[in-house]
Amino acid sequence: MLRPLEIIFRYVTSSWRVLPDIIVLGEVRCGTTSLCQHLADFELVECHTPFCLWAHPELDNKETFFFVGHYLGIVTPRHYRMCFPLKITKWWSETKRKICGQPSKPFLSFDGCAQYLTSPTAPYLIAQAYREAGEKPPVFIACVRRPAEQALSWWKYENNAMKWGEGMMLNKWNTSLRGKLYPPRSVEDAIDYSRSQHIEDMYQRAESLGIETVENRRFFRLPQWAVTWPGGQLSAIGRTSCFARNILRYERVFSSTRSDKHKQALKHVSIFPIEFLRDKKSLNRFIASILDRAAERRNNKSLFAAGIHLAESSNRLNIIHRNAGSSLSREEEVQYIRSKFAKDEDSLNSLLRVNGIPITYE
Image (cartoon, rainbow, N blue to C red; front, side):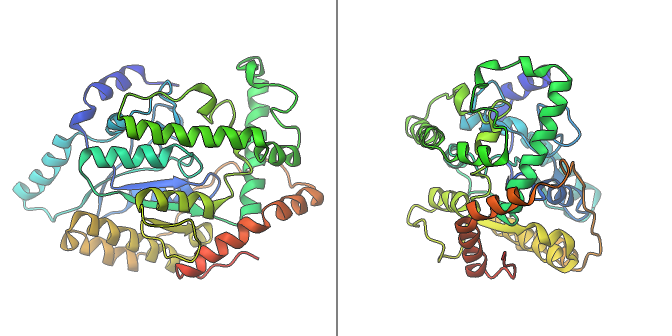
């Protein structure tokens, strides 16, 4: 369900709104929903959730989908603010606390779009949005898991979604995308298709679009072929699990002196392994580290001090469960996927080691 009137109002008032302090880049099926819920519910932070054009319980108050083209393809960086609170809302919140003598709370906002990490255009557009506003880059979070497990989970989830769509007679819609190769009939076909030269060329073209938009500083609308959802998200199944490559793209865009190597500590992106959701201490330490980075961005450590301390000692651990997908896959499917993502697994392990994260995928 769409919200057309609110979208129009937000576009008109976009220049009077704030940009998010934190962006959860993804990846899909890696715990982004649970992590965003923790951020939204944290007691000692006044966290404002983003606007979502889709009135859906799993998406609402979590992800904007702005830079992946859901607003009729419009991804002009200066309009990104439309999804976040008005500046006067932030001013009034801070002023009211002072007048009432209430303890200060950091006013934070976030975006949790799980498609940003894979998107080849999003890094350039996000960088331009903050550059035009004269603001420091946001705190980036990349949720990860074992690459083969992520690909398999995404395949199951999307197949369930397609079965639901067919039951609703939606298979007659967007027929131009359907052909001999798409949608793929098996996970093997899906991965081979996503890594074909045809899809590789499309991703390179899409990345070039992002670069050109930033250079020209113009109104920009993604062409339909560059919008991954709802028509062609399975074309990315072999790419969403390439965590190291996708994370390093953001590091490269936001740090022009960096190279695409796994031996460098990350400066802009914090890695959140899905295993942290099952370990209270790891989850608490991670939330505290994100608040600490947000405090650095604001140059106001004292404002965040109480929140950081509480995050380190909190006992809450709520996991938000989503559709787990269809039944278990065939053993040959599992082995095929693991063989295809062996190099990506090694690259991710290298990145985890360099950044001091005690998780290894073997």
